[in-house]
Image (cartoon, rainbow, N blue to C red; front, top):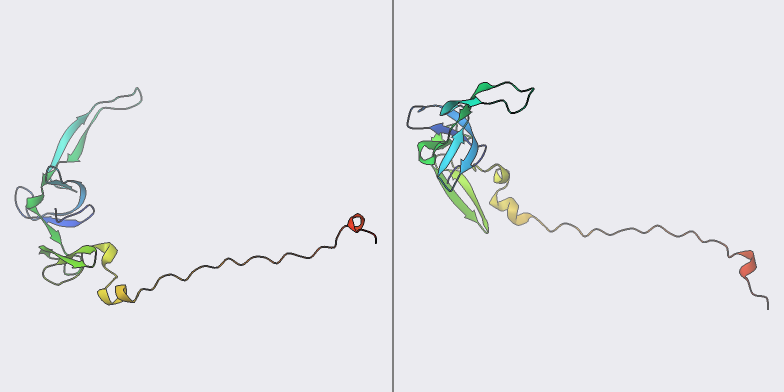
Length: 142
């Protein structure tokens, strides 16, 4: 799946075509995503305790992942996703503008990643022990 949780997506087909929303749940096994404000159903919620009230609630249903496209955060257009692999890191990139889509890697570039050095070794400074005088009764007489 080329979309992840909390991504902003555009629905491209179906009853809700043209709506944008945030992904609130994904199901890679079934190939579906749940988008905020899309595919809304009404569900009767029964009171389970004495102080609760029965009510009808709106819930979002899942839609197929092929019916949504990722909205690029930098160019604000619905785009396809490319994958760049730098070393062992694989991250998503906008196919139109080339901006990094993954928030974790957005601030890093390949040049800065190479210049990173190992953190300095921390040395623990020990407090100096105060010299105490020997007890009076502890000295041996010659």
